[in-house]
View 1 (tube, rainbow, N blue to C red):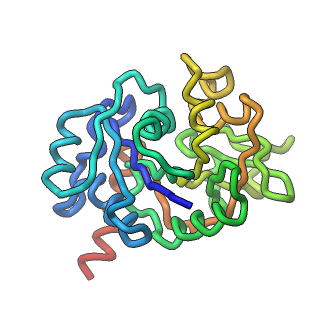
View 2: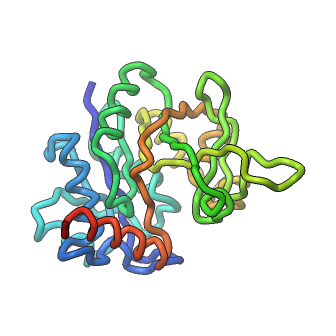
Length: 244
């Protein structure tokens, strides 16, 4: 089975423009994300997919394999789907370009589950341990069946209760794995599906198209960088790890 790992990265983020090139102690966020991925997957199977010339040149200067994709891609998953049209594989692992703390062991766990659940879409989750993250609209929360198949994902605090209290919840970890056929169907949409558009969560399009999504538990190490506060939090962790 041929598996390629793709890191979609765009410059024009609505909440944090230019975030793939944010510097964390001398390394850009996209470089740190790539370095983590390269600890799990041979670099010859890793590509950055972007629509931005600055990111493209930055990756070239770092000897990272990079491809230019259309600026019309609706989401990072659409960018991976476009990449798949010209780069043949059985499965594509999508690691978002704003994941500088991603755990390489989590990527390896996704690879193991590709073999276990061959043909299925796979996404990661981890427990939420505090009320702040439970109520944060930046963090997609997930609920799933006992067998691990996704029921719903939302930026709202779910599962909820009539007392509006944080009891138990789980957050999405942005490592995905897609068989090529699912990506092609996904990319045929000319606009976001209804729930995907309302929630601004791209994985919901698969559910709205009738696909099951298999959720697997990963570590709590990942922090997606979506806001200036996320930058501060991640910087503090990197400083603690590298400046001891």
